[in-house]
Image (cartoon, rainbow, N blue to C red; front, side, top):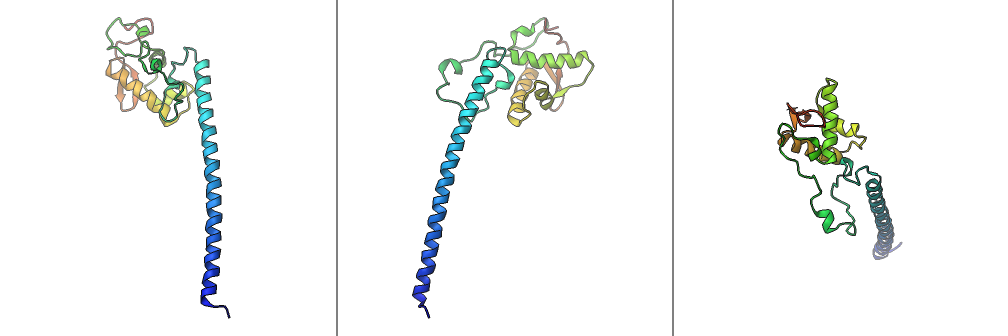
Length: 178
């Protein structure tokens, strides 16, 4: 009959082996996770660069909103942090042309002007994202919502119901503001 101490030593040895195996497996998984995360970051950077190159207005499009998270430190520069031309949204007044707005804001106004022209109702930001061919994901929708809210605050858009946007009274086609 084996001694109690001998049995305890056997169980301790088996437990120690199991702990070592699990640690090795955890180390392997951790290394695999780090490699996958690095690959993901590289693909995200590559996608942003391709989007910038392919964007019709050199990367100043709505679907190029920086949503935080991964941002390549090498691509960040003082010029990139500075305000972009036409990034300010002026308060709308009669006769103010859409050309004072950046392309992003003009696209939002154009979609809503088309809806008014076709006698269709207001749009949600999710519907706008789909109209622009963007991925309808929270980050993209919130970027659009931020822009739409800014346009509402400056008098370019109206929000007749929470989360639904249309052109404000008096704002019309892209040639002029009235």
